[in-house]
Image (cartoon, rainbow, N blue to C red):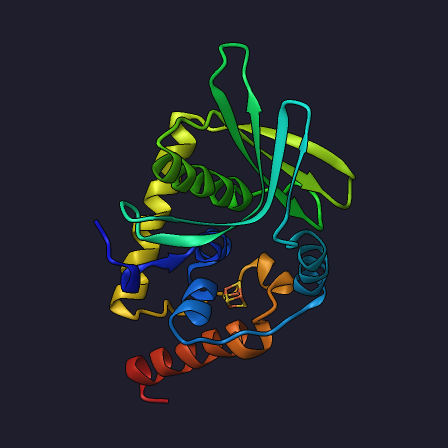
Length: 208
Ligand code: SF4
């Protein structure tokens, strides 16, 4: 069990799956920089983070719900949580996350959604079968089954983030294709870092 001062932010998981160094720069070194992708996301979240709820028939929708898990040492917020009566009479709980873009190639969004579900399961003592995304670019809702494999990957990611945050470890930069879409590229300087490392290596080897 974790204490509140050991909690990591839910957003750190998504950052870690995108790039462990990005996660450490944000959550260890406290660095932030916006780019077109983060600004689009912020505008969308300003619209949905309204801290309200509404009921329509058997569906109750709660927005901007604060969540946490003492077991996993996590805290954050769900854009939306839907509560509906299932056919068995038991309430079905489903987190819904709003994304400005479209489904990603990596599992960063799914890990974030699954972590939200794990928090809700602990807080509400329930089982969350699925979650959903609403992607702004394709204007479509996409459902995600919270499989055992996704739960395993999510818990592994949580452990890895606790490790780098706990050790205050910032991994070395490595230039990769997705650096082009990273809002921290100017600060991280992944190419310069690699050149510096190469020079240091050559100096050590050949003293040049
Ligand atoms: S620029 Fe590249 S290496 Fe640096 S934090 Fe972003 S994705 Fe990671």
